[in-house]
Image (cartoon, rainbow, N blue to C red; front, side, top):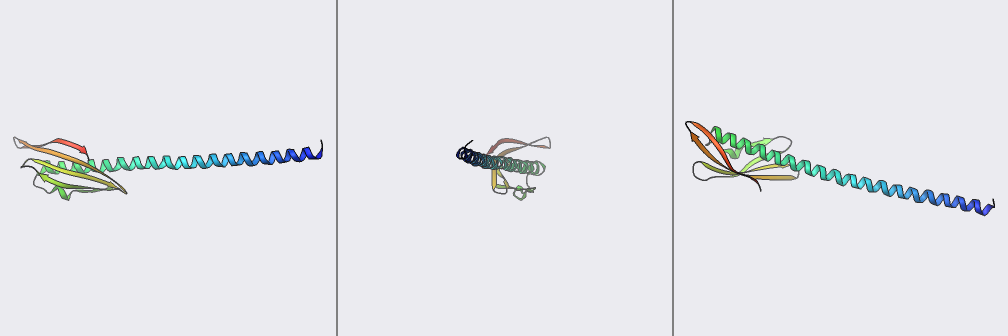
Length: 136
């Protein structure tokens, strides 16, 4: 085989190796970026569920407090567990209708739930009926 053909084969092999390496590096970088984006979406969804769960827990605590004693101040209810939740904007409409917002917060996420409940007493037994439970 002539000398110039063996040099050309070496050059082709070198270029093929460089091109294939570049393609693999680009594929690796693309998969890495896609993986990070996917992880961020999953984390965001998880935080959203946690904040909603915290808001629901706080609202349940407020309703249990109202059921036990309607004169208690539900604005002081706070749950601290990996995040925070508070009861805000409490308003009584008459003696037996209460509305409030339950706020769940987890790092940079926040969910609010608006709750309206009617307090009924029947033969000494107090019941709380929820007429509205909706995200804000």
